[in-house]
Image 1 (tube, one colour):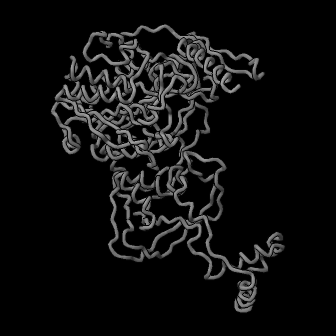
Image 2: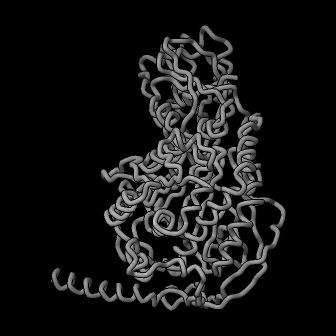
Image 3: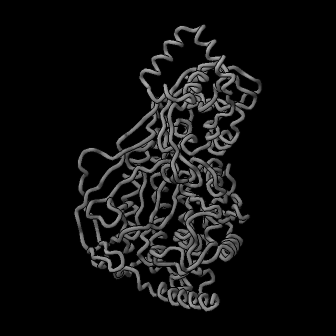
Length: 599
């Protein structure tokens, strides 16, 4: 019986595969015949890619990609393939360096007079457009007619960041995406999402990226994805922190120089560029688009808080793979030209943002109370029909281009901010936190001898943990803090991290409990929630009697507590606990967050 069922299921999924290839369940397509198709080389070309050989339907495996890139680098004096790390399953995470001056070391590239552009593909391995576009672009630079692009900039290209997810590939990875035929998986081998890991640094891929950023010091960072969600006309959407961020001068440069030139290049090649789009009702755009304020756990916001100009590309999943890859190629080619043309202005913007005064840092944003401005939107006609399966309405896209005015709902209003101390102290025993700060690239002073330090500490008075894990961690659903000064004896190996440094805002985001991306909220200090010493009732009874007889004020407070809290008065357990907390035997470190502020 089991074998018959298995055979039936196999036959079903074989037919489903054919249906998936035919895209029968996808919304109708708008016709497209962009000029960028001229970028494709003939199948007889020595350096034709798997993408081109398959008529824009397939993307090569990890092994095929790296073999092709290695061969390309061996045949060009302007390229070099290097390893930047090793994945959880042991695969090399590789990066291609492109330099006309043959500057291939981190020291050479970080001090070059040319801008350095870092672009990565496959952080979500099913969203792989950037890999195939980058292969074509580096081919045309090193073997074709576009070597002059390297007069504008040096390049760092990571073809596949989530290499393990890339090899968890099949035809059933992303049902709402038009190609490639086989796609990788969103998360890594530990089921962690790399694009939620920029602050906590738990994955091999993001650790590798942080080290690249610190070693090579790129001038622009590009992270290439593919969307989920609704239908619209745009094929290449991208965004950056335009408002409500930590690098206002960089945002002005991206809005004033970068975006107009890149948009025009895409339009000239037959593509439709647009902003990042998130339907307010999660179905269509009748209620508007949400311009989210992402936290620094995401790539482009992490770049923003580091004062590293950063772009999040989100190609439209419902457009064909070929169209998306060619659009990405056009995007990247123009980025190189724009960086070469306006590098000095960008340098000035970065310097200005790095030198901002750091009196307070916004740790959370919210939506505006006022009505959103309307924007022109190149949409796709849709209708709602009632499902015969669920009895509920759902959206059906009709494949017809329409132009709408929709609300653009901004999420850039500060909701919470914290003052910036002079420095933070981290005790030596919390070495995991110190190690993460080192990978982020912070300047630190390390104690060689024990030292008593006066600092401000936060203690949890109330808290509630989430019922569900996020990225394998139980975050805080709510909490309340009390702050007080204390003198703490710190052991050798403890560190002092000053806030007056280029990454000062990032430090505050990681250290302050109110920040949604703090180490505290990510659950790195959960061990402080456990109380580990207790008293027996036969000890508490005589001790309490002595305390009451010797301390009239304590007796008065006890009577007041019983009066205002009837449940307390009826609970021997709570009464014992209340007295225990008044004794010097009570754990003074319980619920104390071990990050000290120096003012």
